[in-house]
Length: 301
Image (cartoon, rainbow, N blue to C red):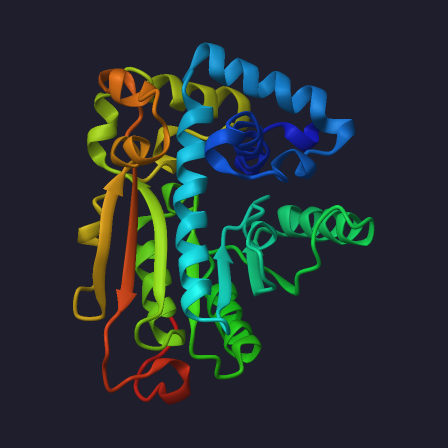
């Protein structure tokens, strides 16, 4: 297998796009397949097939539901706030800004390998008029590195230029970050956001370890990406969110969302063997601190 696809957890960014493409009726991500380069397609699909056959047969359904859930939030936010800035932390090869009907300024953040390829691919597809033109700023960061993290948020502050309306998405990211790093990201999000701005993310509860597929997933990550169980972080979202700063708008899971999007109810019919993925949407409360415009004593960490 090519070293481009071996021993890197960032390889999962390709795998989820295969799932999005295969669950098009759920994900509504009509561009998902475009992020998979033709010279890598064979080995990416081979790796995806291995994951589906040996680990989790419902990954495409789960990813389709997840993608649609976050896309609906973005669409709703954009309909309410036409000056919305979309901040996608751990952006991977997502298509969100291209799936909404109107232009939206987007800031995408991920590791350098992902961002460099995403930027190059997006520019090519826009030039070929395959993707709609969207203004996107690409930034790189190792979220576990304090210096890089603070530098990132300072750059985002400059990019926002006192924009009041933001939507921050952290999809497929927090599983791979220690809980303390997650808390720091939420703190920094609060610093740069104005009141009523929303943040959404997905997470796995500790109870996921009861699934018969969980250990198989860990074995797959270890064998294919050289990542062991200690690199996966499980938590209850209510334990990492500062309720003094954020209101929880919705705390849901893939089973509840399937009932709204998939009439087959495949996951619900097999929920005892499924990986329960959870989604949460929070909104910044009104306070004396109104985002970076009046940071006061608030600091980036």
